[in-house]
Image (cartoon, rainbow, N blue to C red):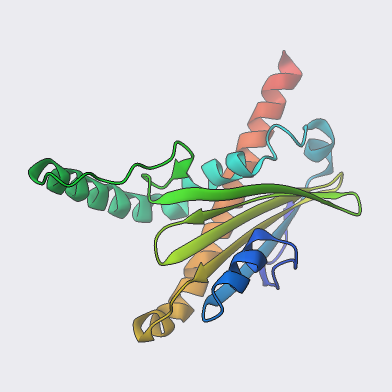
Length: 193
């Protein structure tokens, strides 16, 4: 199994990230890709199981790099719940398909087939940001993609953008590693059965 270097790339033109970028013309958009060469695992796994966008998102948001952010988000959620108990205003419901302590709500999910390559993707909304996760398995490698879209960037966001790109690379690598661990362990379990 071999991990490639993480590279900045343009989002595919028919991707959910590109579609949402058109809806927010003043936005800042970034997209990163990581390829994992793993022929033995990709040939054994079904694209409908471990390579779903939901499974990739689950692994991404449970990765080691996301743990600190997850702790922060849970603390914020706890404060929101505490404030909700004190006020009569109803808190907006989160859809069942949400991640990161409910802060990342799935807006849209899509599966694309381009010249024998399947891309499973979803876009999540967290208020001022959209997060895009895509996974494209084929018989020799898996391509993981992670992108963000800042709907209305301000001076603070522009200032923090280099840190965001650095952190995004760590998140992508950690999430991909978590996913590789997940499907390699599920493959070995299925092989033993």
